[in-house]
Image (cartoon, rainbow, N blue to C red; front, side):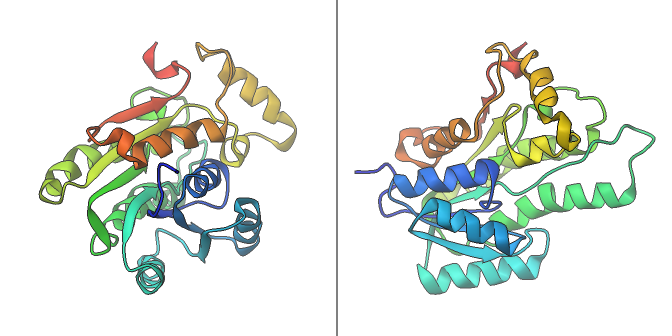
Length: 248
């Protein structure tokens, strides 16, 4: 018997990295999963990797009409949602003085606007007592050179959880933030030139008490905890899965 048997989950950004690893884990634990992504080839590959009990949806979480189409699909297919993992997002390296309006709008659009409306538009389908998981980051509480815009979005995500648990208290919907540290994902590796990925990971590993970066499946296991009844009294927290890096 899986920890998510019979549950319906929506995972945005489920076509790669942490989202894909989480989709695999959710399916293994018995959930029926919807994943979103912006690129059709990535979605096709993800569905093949997951292997079953998954429905792909191509769309952009910062485009509200795409979210409407997503939830129309979910409504017609299952009629309800038990877990929303608002995971889609990203960022770019840009020090103060070189930040462009385009970078700002894109990062806040996916990370903040996207997360907000992913959850808000899910509310009519979310069952009472459901679990909402927001992807945060250790950057929500630490300073990271040339990463201020991304970091600000994750600080916003942290406060969403604190506020939404009050807005949703009558429905007993839990909202928690899962904040990974540096994790071996395409998004992180994409911050470095193609031939410098290992060097980037090595530099992060030196700053982590466990001496290494995380793996997507390690973060996915924490997502399973937050989605399941194992965390039934966990609400409004920021749970760091970071090898200790945010604690020093």
